[in-house]
Structures are given as C-alpha cells and as structure tokens.
Length: 262
Image 1 (cartoon, helix red, strand yellow):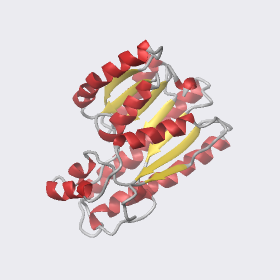
Image 2 (cartoon, rainbow, N blue to C red):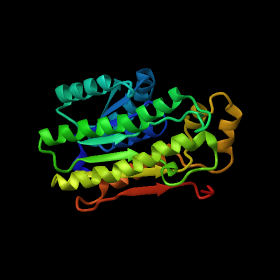
Image 3 (cartoon, rainbow, N blue to C red):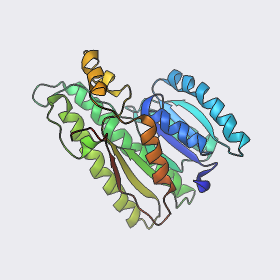
Image 4 (cartoon, rainbow, N blue to C red):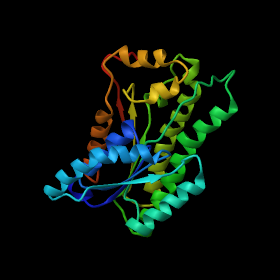
C-alpha cells in the first residue's frame, strides 16, 4: 500500500456500513479519501471516529484524511459537480470505489417502477458515471496505475429464491458484466488502470433494515440466522486488491459467511 499514500480515493456510500469501513481503512493507509453520501451528517459523525485514527496515522508518518462530500448519486449533475470539486481541491481521483447500492422490495410481477428505476439509477448508472469520470480524471493527469473497485454482491452471481431480491440481483448481475467490460476497455486503451469486483454475501450492516424497512423483525432475522461478514471484512478485501502487484489483475473477490447456503 506504500504507493497509495497521499493519493486520492473516492468512496461512494461512505456514511455507514461497508463504505464507512472502507473509508476508515484507506485513511489508515495514508490516503486522502473523499467519502460521499446523500447524508453528509452521518459521514461527519464517522469523521469524529476517524479523526483519532487520522492522528495516529499522522504520528506514524501517514497523511490520511477523510473529506466528507454530500452527493445524491441518482442525480448526474451532482456527480459531475462532485468530480469537478475533487479536481479543483485535490487534482483528481486515483482510486474509485463504487460502493453505494440499495434494494427495494419490488418483485418483477408486481413491483413499482419507481423502485426499479431508483435501483437502476444508483446501482448501475451512478457506478458507470463515476467510473467514466474517474477514468477521465486519471487520463487527464497521465495516471496509469489507478484502480476502479466495484462493491458488487453474491447476488450478481446467482438469483436467490425471493421475489423481493430479483430486481436487485439483476442490477448486481449488471455490475458483474460492467466490471468485465470496464476491464476490457481499459486494456484496449493500453492503460494499466485495473478494474475489480468485490462480491460479498450477507454483511451485517444497515442494508437489511433499509431493504425490509416495513418489517424490522425480518431484517434482524437475516443477521441472526448466521455469523455474518463484517463491514471490516470487505474493507480488508479492498486493501488486498489495492495491494496486489501492478501486473496482477484481480477480477472478482467472492466472499460469503461460512454458514451461508448460497
């Protein structure tokens, strides 16, 4: 991770869960982390925790910092404004971690179009827009060793037997295909910028409570049924991917709790 110290990483969905854990881990490694989310207050609460970590990093000679940024990823103009601000204040993005994602209980045969559209906007289109703008930033500055990391899901590799999950799984299958497409286009562009998916199974975060917001008991049951992954486990996978030698292309890290069935 030595080569990443002082360089800029964008982490979407950084206010809670996996995004917050990834942001903390990158700060600990000495990176400048722009953590974006719709609710910047939550990032700033997390920042209080990270400030102590940042002080420890500085005393160890690191330069890690966390910069909270408010951005609604379903709005392209806000995404473009965020990248413009990063360019002005921090020159550009070297690592883009597309972590933000959401799910709605909208089955294929009876779901509401609004819920489907929101999942497409955040899980698919925002990921593509951020990737495009991050690569543009790298290309403008002749950055040839950048990294695009898409936090995917095991739902991007198999369809679970639950109508509530089917459209969400479809968006995550899209992420699987998009990541491979990004890898191919980066290679065709004769760049050494890498693209990676990280596909977790059940992670104990706020995700299930947001997904099953009308049934908190069902949400709690998801996490009580097994020893789940922790957000820090996914952050460790991000560090592993970024730490790989520059000639190593890690395409997908699939990880699930040992007790998870599929």
